[in-house]
Each structure stands twice: as C-alpha cells, then as structure tokens.
Amino acid sequence: RLGFLIVAFAVGVQFITFVLLFSRLITNYSLEEALWQSFFHSISAFNNAGFTIFPDHSSLQSLQSDPFALGVIGLSIILGSLSFPVINELARRRGYRRWTLDTKFVLIGTLGVWALGILTILIFELSNPQTIGDLSVSEKVTNSIFQAFTSRTAGFSTIDFTHTRAGTDFMFMLLMFVGGASGSVAGGIKINTAMVLSVAALAAIRGRPNIEVMRREIPYSQVA
Image (cartoon, rainbow, N blue to C red):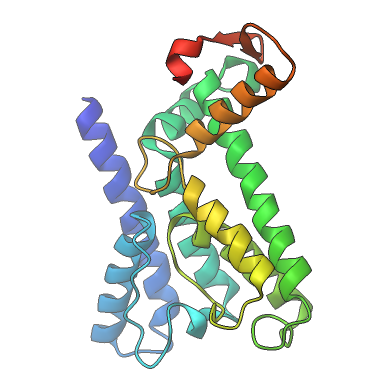
C-alpha cells in the first residue's frame, strides 16, 4: 500500500505538471513539440534532475518572464524535494504540534535556506545587468524566489551563472551541498542532516550534555 501511494503521488504530481505546462507551452510551440516539452520537463522538474531541452536557450532562461510556468515547475520541484513522508504527514496531521521532529526539521530548514538564497540573489545580483539587474521589479522577485529553490536541489536556472558574482556562487555552492530532504529525489547531504548537525553544534557550544530541541532529545549516538 505504501509503495502504491508513493508511485501514485509521483505520477499524479508529474501528470498535473504536464497538463499545466502544456496549457502554457502550446501558445509557443506546435502541438507535437508542446506535448514533448511538457512531458520531458514535468519529469525533470519533479525528479529534481535539472535537464532542459528548450531549443536555442540555456536551461530555463526562455521562461524568465513567465511567472506561471516558473510557478508550475517550482512547485513540482518543491514537492519532489520535500519527500513523500513529509508530504504524507502534512496531509494527514493538521497542526504544527502534531508533526514529527523530522517534518519540523525539513520545513524549518527548507524555509530557512530558501530565504537565505533569496536574500543572496537580491543582495549580490540586484544591480547586476547580466543577471537580474535589467529585469522589472516583479521579474526580479519572481526569478529570485525561483532561483533560490531550484539551484539548491534541481539545477534549473533562469539566469546565466557564468555572470553571477562571487558571493552568489559561494552561497549557492553551500546550499547545493545541503540539498533537499531525506527520502526525496533531491541530492545533497540532506536538510535533515544539516539541521541535526546544527543543533548538535549549538548544544556542544553551550556545553550541554544532551541535544534537546523542540522538547525532544536526540541521542549523540544517532548524530554520530
């Protein structure tokens, strides 16, 4: 039953992504090309693969001014990188207090690194005309939000990273090192691991014999 639910969830998300992308790409491509592009990118997005096949364009730069397409792809990436156990718990257990420590770690850590990525782009690239400097205000916000998440787990890009500044490159290398949640399709050391290591380091700095967080205790043997 669990295996069936995981497959149904994965196929369902990719199918919905395919339909939504097709409704947008059919305005730019022929029927056959729109079907193929939508099918390929719905799979690439959910599985955080980062592969693109848009002709004469680098990655997703052709969608830089298309918030609908970026939103669809971005949401698919997020659902793939959070992992099925976390999505399942969010659907079944309403309320922050009822979530497991693992789910809390994933959501808090994901929101934290996402915000860090957005701030990094806005700080270092806002005045860079070769990335987002010449875009409108709405496009700057849209691309910053999208890029902050996809670069961490999927590898898509709406800007040319050969022209990004050193601060952006450094921070995004760290975010890619962390990656997505355990049990997800994303890579990296996993956000769960990064959160546990951060809590353990904080406990060591404070000289506490036990690792306690959110009224829960994590054994040092589990951290090791």
